[in-house]
Length: 399
Image (cartoon, rainbow, N blue to C red; front, side):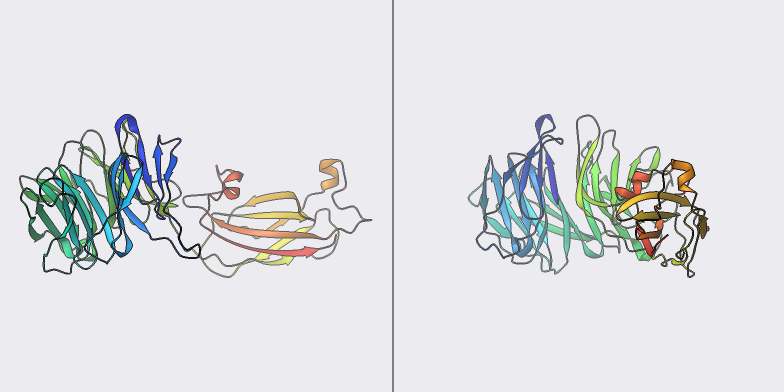
């Protein structure tokens, strides 16, 4: 998902990267639009941003794509630019879209040119990443701390470009009190990521009470919350709340959703959309299984060795016979041996019937779970993907 807007009674409109639109409650959105398919082998255009309401919204994306939803009908609109448009806003004076290589275009809400997209000839090739509409026009942010202020009150747009930081900026929005915020990368490669708030026509530091502890990844999204709070979405999938009392980490245990946009609901909760995250590592070395060999099954010794490398959260020893898992054992990451119990004595039946000579295997899994340990974990965590990296090896044997 790449876009979301909220309407009355917490009705939502959600935008997928392939251009599909879903409308309804957060629990049961319904598909209302799918782009027509003219070539079944063609890759659909990527649609990157959404603005407006669930019944009147504008979408932008690759190759200058612009679409307009009115009611349940979607129409393609003729824009000015052919480069990728990365964000759009829809306000009382009109709509503004921004994108790569200096692309800024606007469509006025009233006047002789109402509904017609026009280029803002800024003379700059700055990459613009985000835009927010205001009562006077719009604010766009982009590379190298660039902030463009657009005035849409006349027949043509007026603009001014300022630099408020040296860091690239990726997000701009207003909180629920109407105050504007912007956010982006770390300035000069060190310290906290850029977070600023517009106060008395000046962009001031948005980190309050010197409450930021440690370095954080660059910021990619902002979501206004009740009581002047702001939810910060970073480039690694982390989420942090900033308010007058400080900063709190509200990141999920698994950072498998890199949220890029969101809305606040009437109950104060937030709905976030984004794309699946991909993390590589830590790269765990593969265990080398040294034992068992084909020998006595009861009290059989298991041994494995590992080359030096990052430590897993724990290891799992898995005994498998003809595709049926008989036995799991979880051990500390430093443990490299175990002993198979006497299954006949424990279970009252012969797990290794001598007459059948079933081919078994012992598998050793080394697993890394963020902030995980052998204490207090759930075996379902592994089955439902609550892990980040995994190395495994297996050895067949006949008891």
